Length: 292
Ligand code: AMP
Ligand code: ZN
Ligand code: FE
Ligand code: FE
Image (cartoon, rainbow, N blue to C red):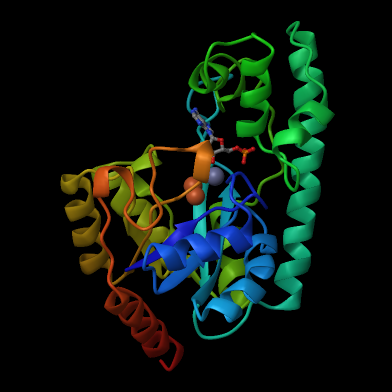
């Protein structure tokens, strides 16, 4: 079994990177991809534990990218997520430097988010969110504080009322476009895969058109297997991968206690089963493209 889409507490997962490695070994996972949001810190921190346990660690990242179009005036489409996988070589120093600038843009967004919440009569200090997001504060951490302080009764309500991209406290962040994200990943030696396509607003012919365009820019993969995909969705994304010559990628999107329904390696109610041969296939397809 393998899991190529997981988050640690270096972004918005709840699990320490070393603990995630040990958990993966206990679950019988043979290769673990750590794909934290806009950072390689979780992957880096997991390396010593992986070496000690003999677990194959896959270097990955999940970039948040700017939505393509404005949905309605004043509304904002959710950001599109892009996975990067470095299967043949390590990411360049330049890419790591660029990720640092993304961290800075997140910090700036968080300061603006606190101000925006205050305007709405919601008093939350950055330090309170930092208790949950010790390494990188994201909106899920703000959501927990809003719950703790009784402004909302659950995490989803925190997003629906305040934090979602189209909610009252939405703050624009200086995110790269999908095209820039793809270019950065490819130039640094990685392969770019469109994460959980089910969350994109595009369907059918619109999704096909988007894929055609992104492939021109350098997109190599699409996340066929994901905890949020239904069996019919998975089949449809597998067919898209086949017809566009995209490399299928997959994983659970494990976030530990922050998304407790998603289990490491097996997803929601065991809806994910990926064998090691799936990773071999990904690597073979990457190598074939590399040698083209
Ligand atoms: P951030 O990285 O701080 O922009 O927060 C993004 C994360 O917040 C995503 O990875 C989701 O886990 C969560 N999120 C974003 N929008 C929603 C939403 N509408 N409902 C629930 N969770 C959301
Ligand atoms: Zn996340
Ligand atoms: Fe994502
Ligand atoms: Fe994710």
